[in-house]
Image 1 (cartoon, rainbow, N blue to C red):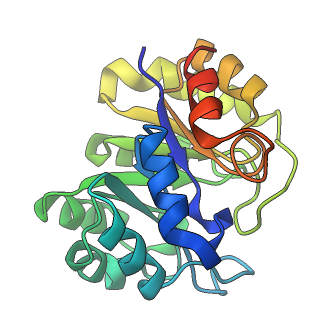
Image 2 (spheres, rainbow, N blue to C red):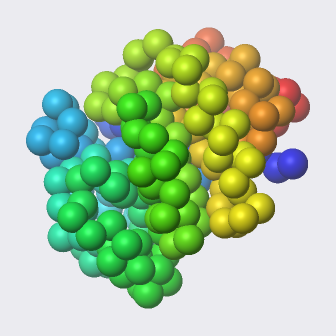
Amino acid sequence: MHKLLCPSMMVADFTKIKEEVQELELANIDIFHMDIMDGSFVPNMALGVEDYKAIRSLTSKKMDVHLMVQRPKNYIKMFFNLGANIIYIHPESDQMPTSTLEMIKSLGMTPGIAINPGTSIESIEPLLNLTQNVLVMTVNPGFAGQPYLDFVNKKIDALVKLQNQYNYQIFVDGAISPQKVKMLSQRGVTGFILGTSSLFNKDKGYSQIIQELRQL
């Protein structure tokens, strides 16, 4: 199974973002992962419109948007116009998530939902009919560098069992080390958001790291 390896650009070095994007492209990553935070839905602020524009202008690879914001529907057309390919919303932040997912799909983008560690499968199962990607948060969203929450593995196993019924891909985000990439890919996870646990701030170059992760 081909792993989808997605660098979390929140932890990239924006003082040399052109070089970062070029090196990640040469490493043959799959999707640039962009965390958008409003300081309200999560207690932090992260990448904004200008950051998105900058990276979009430097790459033709797929880019996603992880909307950690209140009322995500208000942002969908803006990120469509900025060239997003995939948009994740948190169902808790949206009064009508089904409508928002349909809007994402109608614009030709891939609709996704992000599931917090405390969000139950039962509460989001109706949305799986409208979802192509499910992003499972394995830490509480908002900050890099948190420890992996092992109890989330049960949720991942439950989502794997439901996959054939609903036809979506499972991604994971939060403290994804090489060991977690190996363990979770064996469990049935397709996509991995890569931050400081496996990709950034390492002694090796991105190409070597990505090649090693693909071989796990």
